[in-house]
Amino acid sequence: MMRTDYNEAISAYTKAIMKDGDYAEAYYNRGLAKVMSYRLLQGCEDLKRSLQMGYEVAEEVITGFCGS
Image (tube, rainbow, N blue to C red):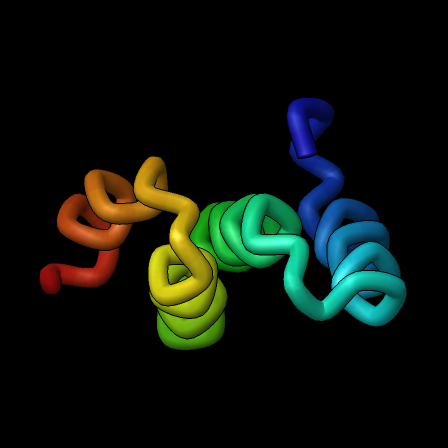
């Protein structure tokens, strides 16, 4: 994701989530990659899911990008 290859990052985080559906940080990172690639609604869904799973870092990002 740091190389701005967001599609590759999304694919990698999706694979991680498929292996471990409780991996909140993967949802967070995939959400960021989606937001950065102009898929705001999908990204916000992932970010909110990571917050629901207890990844509190997501709260500030959700407020900034998703408005709630």
